[in-house]
Length: 482
Image: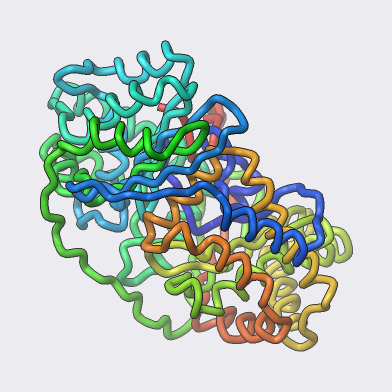
């Protein structure tokens, strides 16, 4: 299982820590640049013709089918619009704990049998939890869709959440927290940053949960979460691959259609109050090198057609990072040698507010203060001088090329659909979003840099490295298989 620390992307793009493949909306990848506008028109045309169908069952389950017949395989994904942002104080981490418990059996499928049956069919499966949603998936031969649907629909409403299994699994989750956060300085730094940056919004809590909440958690907490959020009307089922939509809808009705629905609780709307000045924190942890994160509160996409700032921020991220010739790497790593590694990160798609992040590690002989000053100068230079036509062309070509390459994987295609649907947007917005990226102007990039990347929106976190212990270092990143 995995927990997804979504807002930061610069460091994750170097660590590559998703379970099977990198997140499909991540952009910092090595790609062949294509001619932006022409490729975009081709891609938009292809998407408009793409065989994507949707239907909502009587119990509220939305079913989306993406037909792609290039190989005799498919992926089934079920996305629940319930992530750590929906948790209550005192039970942080319960969304991720329930994700673990979903593999612990039902009346007809004993603990561990779900994974065994998928593996015996030649498939693979896993799950992940984020701030915004929880998702489960299986990748199999096209003939095995009935098996996947039978297993997934069964645990949607028949989960047996026993105290014995819970007591074993909560220890696994606590050990995961020790390995993936407490003993990982950058992850610990990120956790402290989020807690400082957000005053009200539940993004301030870690997806994996605070340790004292995990220690106090009961089987009843997990059971309540399951009964509250795991209902057809709070889920989206996506099947992509060598399938026929008509057959998938009929199969979905057979396996999922009779699951009882229940009313969801009213969701609270959290609005983060304006920050009234720069925030700074220092995190002391065993590490080899210091590290700097500068995180700015930023808007996320709410209306794909009308919004403009999120698209300009996407382009700004690409101007600053994106590849070896981007501004930060060129200026701060190669020319000034003030940083040994540097990056920018921004994700325009989320249920809650966003962050635009700059982060890096100072070069030997340089300090985090030197690096912060150099980053600030790069931002000031961009606001003063703007961005060039060549930079805009490069970034737009990268975004378009990434979208083209996603079409090579049915898993990527399903992930993109599921993520957008789970945060309140529609998969139909994909061509609109691509078009809007291509319409971003140099002036818009300057304006968002000036208006968003300012001290009143900024939280700075510094890693103060402490002596390393002699104990063995845990391996791995923030994602791992169950």
